View 1 (cartoon, helix red, strand yellow):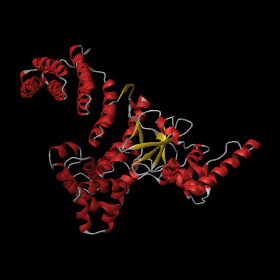
View 2: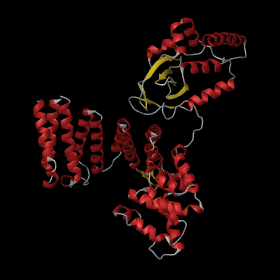
View 3: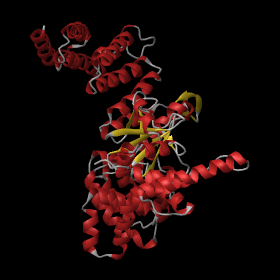
View 4: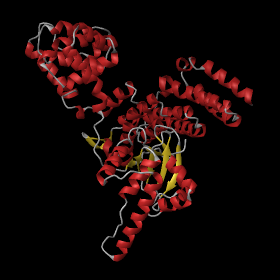
Length: 492
């Protein structure tokens, strides 16, 4: 349903003119749209309803909230409705020059327009402090649900305001803190309730990491035993460390029992003292791991710790926006990837991790953005071919078939003229099989999209690569190759 204030503006030209000048909410500018194509990171519709005289745009979101985007790449919610946004804008508007006679006339004109619009919309009299508080509350709602993206580059607009916001770990850890308090005060029923739930157990262990108490040892032992059911996780290692920090040699048998849960835990928990070690040896082992991997300050944790836990709790947009901001910062300053031990080299693993995180969120445009930069920064032929393979797969899954075709052509160039010897055995290893499979899968996608000429050309390239594979590498692909060729013949 259209906002009543917006409806009044559209129905009464005089009110629309007053909103446009002096309050710079001009309905006529809506016809021009925004300066570039944009979308919300969270999805959902955006309706352009007005503009301002600096190239900014006012959008109405699905819930009625008004998002203002300026022409310089900043955006934010300025009201929960058009009425609220107008009330704030009308109430906070000022005349720039109040010192001369012209400024006095401008003040009179503004006050008259303010009074007329307030009366027409039924706005109450509010103090400047009240209106500023309303604006602040609106702006603070921008993240995570109303973050604006450039629809071509997929980077996020900056915030309109500089108000401080809680660090990511605070909302993510809230449930864990509550559960840790319940574990400390509750009985065995509470222990089982938390420990049986894998996510609540992980969150409680993270809460215990940053709020350590001498009396926690027994509940930590219980959480450690239960976390072993999930095999090797970072929280299992954390639980082992938190238990070990108490320095009770009797816990060594428990720690070794947990370590022997399966092959992964045996590898992941290696290095702990053997049964019979002293309290000091146990504590030294735990302190070393704690200082290198954990610690007591949540702001020192990798952002992926919190985005993973946010995603797992259903805080999808909070995780998405945080990851987008991380990726934007890398695009703006690739020196963030420089390795401390080798300043001329780049550590590109964070980009691949971001691509995987976005894949898990189902955000293929952002996954592709991260993967393309990751592929562009690879130095060896092997790494480049492998990264381009993943890029082509994401492009295919995104429906960008022409782009995927070009990416696979770049893969074939890397195979033909690698420039180093890293690909000398590609024909007999998994990389060769994966590259060949992706050629056939993209060929099938081209055929399904009724692009027979492109499908035939890529099928020929796929068959050529298949012919170079070793017998073992090719065996698992022949059925896919035959099915793909049959599909191409169907559309040909």
